[in-house]
Amino acid sequence: MPRGTLIVFEGLDRCGKTTQTRLCVEGLSRTGVKLAAGLPWRFPDRTTPIGEVLNTYLTSKTELGDEAAHLLFSANRWEKAATIREALGRGETVVYDRYAYSGVAYSVAKGLGMEWCLAADEGLPRPDVVVFLEVGVDEARGREGFGGERFEEAETQKRVGAVFDRLKGEGWSVVEGSGRMEEVAERVKAVVWPVVQAVTGRDDEVG
Ligand code: DGP
Ligand code: NA
Ligand code: NA
Image 1 (tube, protein in one colour):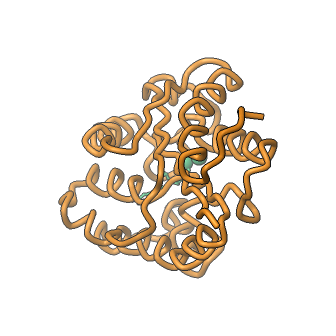
Image 2: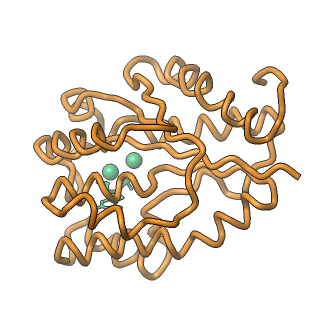
């Protein structure tokens, strides 16, 4: 049995990631690809005990040192690692709204070392494709809800964007995130579907 595909969406706050992640799942479900239950999955997963701490941190109700925050975000991913591996092993495709790259980008933007940050996530299931939704900070800023949480000011977002630029590499697909959401979804489909086909061995048209 072919394994499932691990698809990850990354980007700055308010880049449309959550909408595009959902549309991607809807598109995949129409193709008949076997999907994990309850997609999209997201990090931080605020439903776990560690996730609850992260939620109070992000909404600025608690303070944490940068290193402690980094390791908690990473631990939040590690507590799901076995679940992800099991789903992929059952042939189920998994779609994530944020993954370890956000962890590194936000922490390095705060001044922590790149190597130190990367080390905490080393060994997590490796994504087959990272869809990076590229949206300028000024555009993201104009979107509804921007500015509500800890890292959502323009200066932070610019620094986070610069770290993402350093992380972009093999397996990354940068997708222009501005424009109508249906147009963006088409661009996403064009990069995701070939990967799903390659991993699962399907060769039919996108549904
Ligand atoms: P979201 O729920 O996708 O809006 O993410 C909440 C905020 O948390 C957002 O500003 C990005 C930030 N974030 C997400 N993952 C991590 C991480 O692993 N480490 C750090 N430091 N910040 C993260
Ligand atoms: Na956010
Ligand atoms: Na979001």
